[in-house]
Length: 470
Ligand SMILES: Cc1cc2nc3c(=O)[nH]c(=O)nc-3n(C[C@H](O)[C@H](O)[C@H](O)COP(=O)(O)OP(=O)(O)OC[C@H]3O[C@@H](n4cnc5c(N)ncnc54)[C@H](O)[C@@H]3O)c2cc1C
Image 1 (spheres, rainbow, N blue to C red):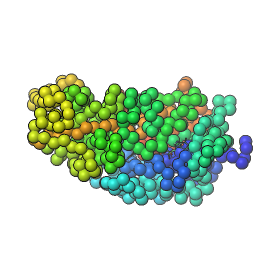
Image 2 (cartoon, rainbow, N blue to C red):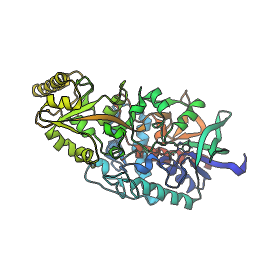
Image 3 (cartoon, helix red, strand yellow):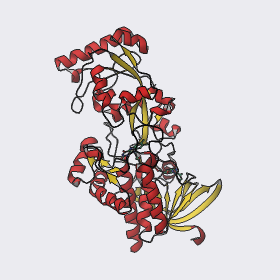
Image 4 (cartoon, rainbow, N blue to C red):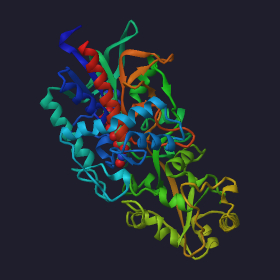
């Protein structure tokens, strides 16, 4: 091994997954380097600009593991790999306590279970700078300081390009540092580059026929480099089709004040979603993350409009910490408003008769208690169907916003990367949003990016350190 460039462990990506892993290793005396392609010490990544809520399928991370496991299974409809679900449920409290011991501060926000362990200080509720000096930003800066104290190396401006393999084992990487090639030896490599949401070619391959018509609701740093490296050496990729994201107003495609907040999920779920023919095309009752996936998968992801009435605008429109009402208006979004559905159809440019018929049928089905028999069905188990009856009526053109890809590299419970035969590849780990197998499926079950990233990063470190001791 070339000692000038050798580390025991190289971590690709300085988001929450990579930094958690790096810190846990460094404090145990492992010689570790974190490669981060961002060039400045406040480089962009999803961890920095996140909302800060550590939860497990909307349950507080400190609830008993059995509750968390139930929540994962219920939200993913049993799609989560059992061992992955179990790992998250049983190790999230330990991981968050580890982060707390390193100075990461949490507060309770409101009473909702999923906000009881939220990074402090909480994000601002408006403005492009909502994350500056808040939750994720403070968390990363705190972890950087701790890493420095623990003797870890953070190589900024360094992009990993390829894995180096010898005899079926990962032995290092090829990278690029400020335009120059760099070869590094390592006993272990951890891929934690955050997924592939910003790579339009990969989105086209797996997620949407027209990815340029989806709003990038993320830091736009995750280019799928890790996935490509892993795929090239025969690693198993899993469940690549789904993503975590939200419905956004379509004006967010061009107006940066309309993403990542306000999220439009509550309005879309409470109202009626129609396509350009003025007819329903999706089951609104399956929730905003599902809707965003469905809309992204359409031939034209910019063809949807949500229709609602005044009580919905005043009720679900005001839900959530960054409510659509009034933020989409004050931030420059276009909200069509009219005294009748016919007038509304004209204003938003939808066929009048078709829209009137859609809304009339929907209201009649609610009255008759038959919404679940509509085509497409309107599920009511999680979100009640509300009539669209009290003028004024509203129409807002919608877009799908992608936050992070749920699918990725298959791993075992120690975050070791698996090959096509489910065998761990020696020396290769993956963590965070680069991994798959926990979230997604037909119902697009969401578990939680921060929990997933921190736990998988922590688990990788535990395994690397334990094997080193042998
Ligand atoms: C607006 C928003 C709100 C969110 N709110 C929440 C929330 O409240 N709760 C929650 O659980 N989750 C939330 N998330 C999701 C959460 O932020 C992510 O799931 C999590 O932070 C991902 O961590 P990560 O380490 O896997 O990836 P990232 O934080 O994206 O880090 C990956 C890093 O890898 C680097 N990188 C990429 N390629 C390379 C390469 N080839 N070489 C070197 N470096 C590379 C990138 O530059 C980046 O710094 C939110 C996300 C967003 C965008």
